[in-house]
Length: 178
Image (tube, rainbow, N blue to C red; front, side, top):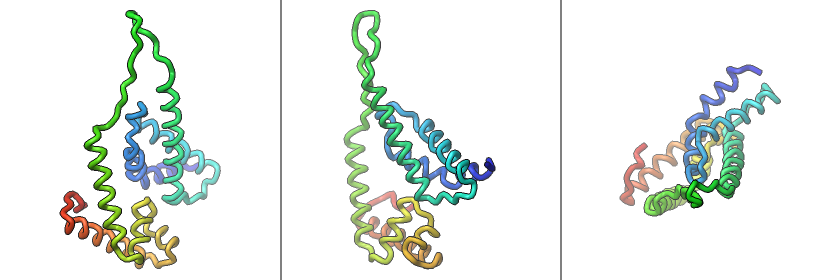
């Protein structure tokens, strides 16, 4: 297998993979996100080893990340249930919960709800390509899935993004200029 193929694949999807991993707050389970990212790289390398000519679209990468996340959380949950050794005083160790601050979780949830509402208000012709794009599909993949030309898909995605941002700004939301 060509090592440059895996390096190019990892470089192409690195930011999306990290974002998908970071969105799951793995610290709650005592899991290092770098370990999860490494497991994703290994699975992608094995997939390319089986089929060196595989194209591996964004949807495949997203599924690999989701699978690795599920496996990591399962392993993390198993580790948390193991008994910890007693200290010299005979006291049991208390595991750290690692729970995020409730106010932050609530704010993020409200923000996601407002984004979903703004997306739901844009016309269907722009909404579906935008939703696919936000799920990690590339513009060419969006074009294929929606039976559009590349240029039409690109315009619909970027117009959908612009309209969603404008709706959020009009609703008084901040921080959606990126």
